[in-house]
Image (cartoon, rainbow, N blue to C red; front, side):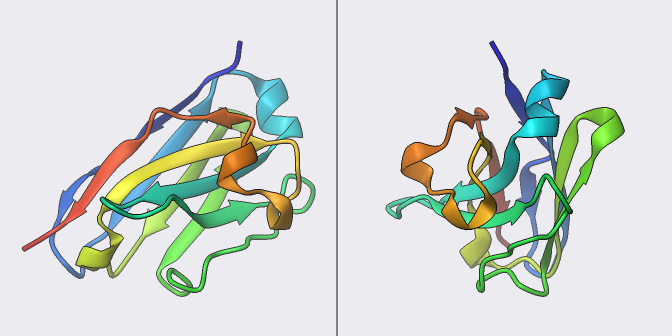
Amino acid sequence: QVHLVESGGGLVQPGGSLKLACQASSSFLFEHYTLAWFRQAPGKEREKVSCISTSDGTTYPADSVKGRFTISRDNAKNTMYLQMDNLTPEDTAIYYCAADIRRCPSIVDKTVDVWGQGTQVTVSA
């Protein structure tokens, strides 16, 4: 059984930064599955924030985070990251990492293969 474990959430002021991490329990999962970040704000549907291709590292950020959030991965540590800069209150949500056998454009929340437990990000003055 494979697991994804997120860390790095917390409370930050508007304009601040946070870096989330997602560690995979299995190198097989990390090497063969596409990894993505999703988030779910109170009263809203879960949305895909960013995704990174396993084959060539191409990233697919959502329009709402382009220029502010950067997804990356460290293969040696089986860890994916989400660097979040210039945060706003609208970024407040539970952030989830996800692994899926599909490629980035085809990943949707209803069919994700493996979910992490989520980490809370709160942006407030």
